[in-house]
Length: 170
Ligand code: MG
Image (cartoon, rainbow, N blue to C red):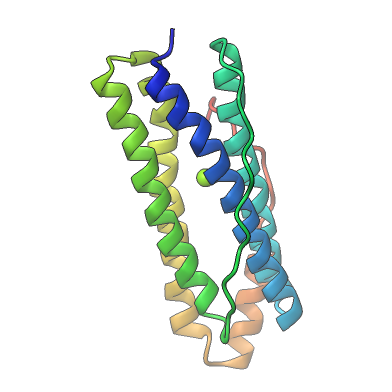
């Protein structure tokens, strides 16, 4: 049996992951309108990954006899005035998500819910990658964002990102 406390936290995290998807979809819409379709693609892929994260958690609860309960998803309400702002908001958001994931892990440890600790291991590692990706984007934008040709090439690079479904097996 899963700890009830941990199951509830994972259920809440399903909503947070879906909110992440919603937030990044909003970033994608911002960049599409700005003419940076590569950045838009990057965040489209990110959106799909966040939905995968939510679904991995749904499946985990289901496989452990817990019926996931879907809650209302918050509206992304940020407005952006330059191309750097979504990137910085993205890093800030991932740092926040890391704290949520760590809370779940800590609760599982406290409850001696070893199965959930193993399940959450993947997400702990994933958050390291998410923060690093977000930070790298900011650094590239700092270096190249001020030059039109360099920005064009950066947009092309981000346009090449391809979605591959996230799974626990990786
Ligand atoms: Mg996520």
